[in-house]
Image (cartoon, rainbow, N blue to C red; front, side, top):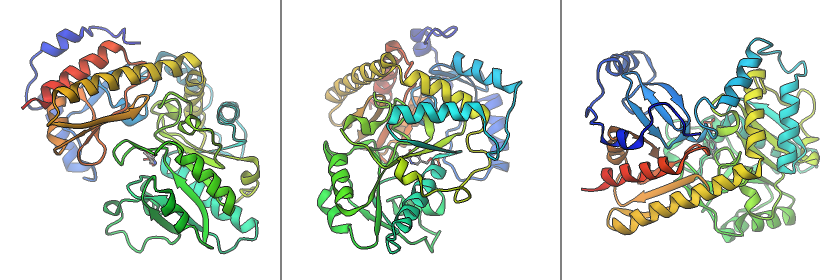
Length: 418
Ligand SMILES: *Cc1c(COP(=O)(O)O)cnc(C)c1O
């Protein structure tokens, strides 16, 4: 998949790069600063084109993208099969509303339920919306069981679940909540991985536990082995729903279709988004037959959810990431890349604290603020971002080549050396 035009990696590496953006980039950024809401810390380049793991900015400068559209483009930019599927659908039908059925959505539901072992699929447009569906599901299931007092969801410190009022409250980081009070009721946070703390937090109001298998935004930190299984047992003991946020970890990212499949557990429901549409906006909530019975006609919905264009893209993703070879590739490339990063850590032990991750979701924790390193990498032609203050996040496309991973490690080394 790295057979992109003029992509000689050694050439990229030695091409001198202007220290600051020039010409077209600068003009666009000026306009952006005049008109866009200034709610993001945006890196000062305007990206225009992409292919596989490469992107080009408005001035034609080439970058190795090891962030993969922030873990959305699992198959790489403009993957030919996704492009063909979307093109094919463009001339047929775009949107019909969920008052009607459409084939791509039904096919996607069948693929995702088969891959997950869950029974029902609901489609929406983003991760936050998928988590909203989980939260509403938990409350409704408990109501329908006659457990009218059970509405609280236990989530974890340092977690990330989205930016809507409910999901930002579920998120275990106060920096995202400050200024938006009063926050909705019904969320309790406990330390991640701490089973005793979860046990203590379960009370007469608890409806569900919502957990990321690996905290992505929170610094690429995995739950300790056995944690999900222990949560499953705890949920069974108390009649709670186990809900897993697979928005960042799902669709092949960790070497399994879903990260919960690394452990022998079946959650009651999961949320998906990020790489589900390979860059097109689509989210999903999958749940068990029993839980799904609570969201009857009229109880929940979304205008654009499962839109035909997004659904055909997601069908390609769902087909590709359920191929055993693709999952083996992710595992193998992830181990290779992590191995290279750990070598780098051994060479630079006062700069890199730890390299960790699973499959192609990898964090490199530094002893210093990551922002200047990210800027330096970009100037040297490598794109990545921060997860937490000191951790660099890599979420490359599953189709990334070993050469590109090596190239990324070389650039990172140059960026890190004092
Ligand atoms: C990105 C992310 C979300 C939020 O998704 P949006 O599409 O930005 O709403 C929620 N949970 C996790 C684990 C995520 O990584």
